Length: 169
Image 1 (tube, helix red, strand yellow):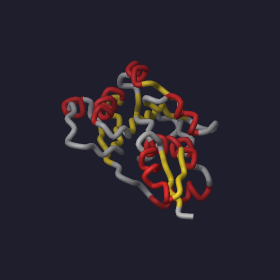
Image 2: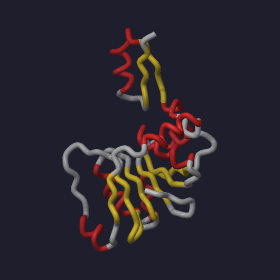
Image 3: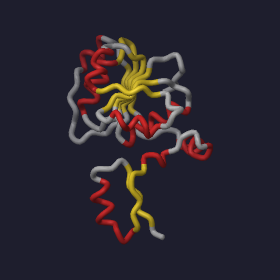
């Protein structure tokens, strides 16, 4: 999806994927609202972030407001929220994969002429370039680093961390 700075963009989900997408949007100078459960995570995005945090409850006041909504929650309630937030003839970019089959209001998609776009990965060349240039720095998402000998401890820590690294040396 091509984005421009004049579009109203919303990103739903403040987990690993959502934060990484927010970094990429900010690197492209796209201001956006980041909807999530953990307001403190906005600090991981750095001072040059173009994101403004909205709690899930605060986002409710943005009914049919956004041109583009990116759904990265990993659960079907994120899709339902995206449908509430996107304007008529707007776009929803689905980044989540769900456990099971989500149900959603297909009628609102048809009546409001909403475009649903599935996006599994994206252009790797652009992503690698952003990493090389330092315009996106995912290292802020790393909460713990463990040696391979501490693998069990690392897996336990990963249950309540954004990102855990296991090193070999």
